[in-house]
Length: 250
Length: 166
Image (cartoon, rainbow over all chains, first blue to last red; front, side, top):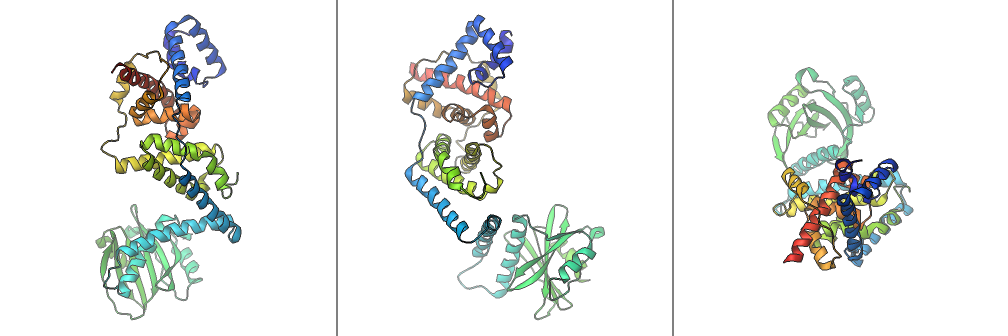
């Protein structure tokens, strides 16, 4: 091995990272090349200087204590109740819940908040959560004949499920969600890269209000028809969201 | 080790390593403690993603990512990372023979190194990680680890010698 070949390997040689054959080749070269031998020696000198320099920092006691407490708390809970998979699930859920609460908290102004605002915040939270925990659909299917019976078996009302792929809103699936104190249907549609959650539940008043609002950059479009309320939530613009709403209540 | 249990046993032995890396990347005690603690919380949250292997390298990866995120957020202006030009310039320098060092000057020289070089040297010389482990922690190919270490050593020696001359 000549100097050009050996030189880039001198550090790896000094670090003991070369395979046996290469290592022997470099070793052979070092016997004849003063420059490469000096390079190797300088790596070793630097190493011993760094090792003896007291350069490592040790974790402060307070930090060690905090980590110990964190682990201790968790272990206690594990032992007390939950199997590991549930524990992991709870953590995911808790993280999502904190994020959801943060979203809600931003809009809790001191003057008090109307129920409509609360529902709107909850809608956004549910939408965000559905994206966060990678759990946007329980039944993944673009086939309306799969999604509809799945939902109907789990709800006390029967939302209509249609695929609007030809109109540019393919059905991605559905799931159950919990909103404003009741179980609701969540239909998931896609528009390009955007996900749209369509929350459906029996309308209390039945008034056909079509208000839109924006919370934290998420748009909400509401529709009432046939005794059902539809809330569409997405980061998609309200115009296109409105198009899907029109298709749904047609 | 089962990823769901024994977290304490898994993490506490590597807490010094975690803090040491955070301290060298952050440059002061206070920020290092914040970063190390946040990294432990993240490690706890993502422990399901631990797939065996070196728990230390796994934790150090999280510390490293936490530190970089933190540095970008809080010190975007002063955070110096390497460009290709820097690499070329460093490549050209001649390695001086390293003389026995006084620890204070060595520490100061290491603190002056660009982030990626400092990180590579700390992981290799202070934590004793293999090239493969450093590659995993820093998220770069093995060849990059090799060249970074060589350049880091050259530059450290150059800085150290300059300090000696002043």
